Image (cartoon, rainbow, N blue to C red):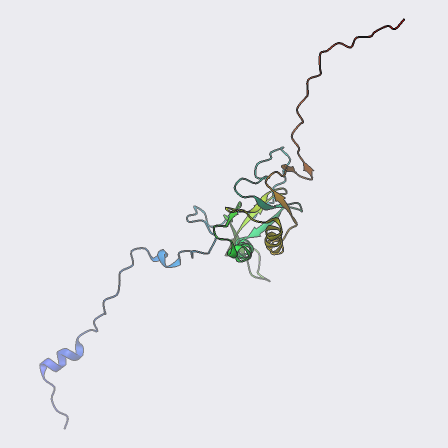
Length: 210
């Protein structure tokens, strides 16, 4: 014969399980914040955007084609391209690794990946909206400066070697430039006009020898 359970034990068996206390998260999206080494905008109004095309400089603007902060840099001379954030981070790490021996050396990134790229899977039927977000990228045109290095005096040989390795990580052709390099407009280098030298107003006198 089974023993009879008391009223207290019956209430204990019917009592619901208590939930252990957990830290309250006010913003659940805070768990997906970007890392310190990741190049991405802090806030975006629309996470999806049109693919777009790489701009072609036909208006005559020379903005962004010369150095502004450093003493050496690289500039695009090939066709414009869409550079991803991962490619920029890889190239920047290569330059920092080469300049680690110089205390106070700085690397300046002149472009920023703020364009979201969405990708759909292979062999997917048409329709049903745009693909999901994949990575950040930026569109750079021909003649745009990508990296600059400076902060301390850097030898040209070391700067060339560091920026050459960074250029190998980029999907386009670049050139090595210095502080006094002229701006570039497409395939042309724009040199400043030479100042006009005033001609001497002295009159030439002729002497007749008789």
